[in-house]
Length: 496
Image (cartoon, rainbow, N blue to C red; front, side, top):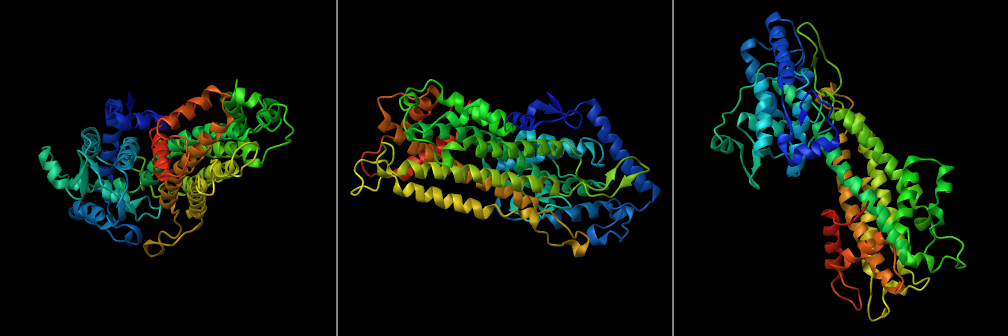
């Protein structure tokens, strides 16, 4: 059981809570921190000191003083005026992760958001009443303002939510559950929509997918190497101990495991081929570099997960700080780096797929013995190549750009929300690229029989064959690719 605002959360914890909201709760210590923060804001209001976001306007209107009587209207206006996102709704799971991360940040007791509001968010997570959040509209500094405004609209009885697989009006769902719209107090609206939870949610779910695809890419490479009858000597431990990057050492060890006791590999152990092309030989170095990027992003995402990212930060009744903890640059840069790392897994996968089509070393051209009349596997590689190039275009770093907003008050922004979205787009494309390589690898092994491969490669081959038969003549292989991609999305391959 994890305690919001008290325990240090890992990405694994968030994924566990996503599956079962009862895995996290507020305890007495967390509630005391929340109530103390709420009381600090009340004292600031009573003191009549001018504090940004508590009794002033927002952004360029920070010099406009707001009276006590206007406080509730100020917070209400903030939410409805900032809910200007556009585009398709993000996945429900992303919205739910945003809520989990927001509850955890607010519960640390530096945001001045009331216990009633936080408990309402927690209740919505537990009841699976999840806000609908548009995918576009955040510049990733001053927090993810538009997405977070949509996330909290249902607290006011506004916006839309997912319930029982359907999108419904939030007000109606609240009524059905015996809940009333809340009235926000001083600082609460700002505390709710200031933060990086949109960027963070994309990082968390993306990392979860990235980790599996890293493992699968190693297995896919092993299958291609078996089909190509390449050498396993580039994976020897001694080679990687003298260039000791963690990622490449790990991949080399995994390749050794995936190729162990392969009859097929032993059958050409003393052939006259000197060395393989880079896409076969340099798997540890290329996949390993992507693993290093994964570890970097994971480390920073977990720091962000346990951070307070709104503004101002209320330290006590006497001290609040207007700072920049909402700025998304700290995640935007590593997200862009990770996106490039994902794209490179696809790039090298496509090269291995291409090698299997060339008709060398005992494999027929286009992996079919009846090419000419039949196109064989010619065109799936076009699809793979198209996806690889699309990924390259998505690798332009969003964090390299900044457009001033808020009349120049917010004059440098991270665009990290775009970084997060592109990261997940490239991951989705990688699933399809690897499905092509798995299809080619399985077909290539047909021409190595009766020799058996390693246990791991044989298991992967058998799984592919549960959905896709050996290609004898042209058929609708687009459906085969989709079937393998679905196996990937369902995590059916044994990758460890």
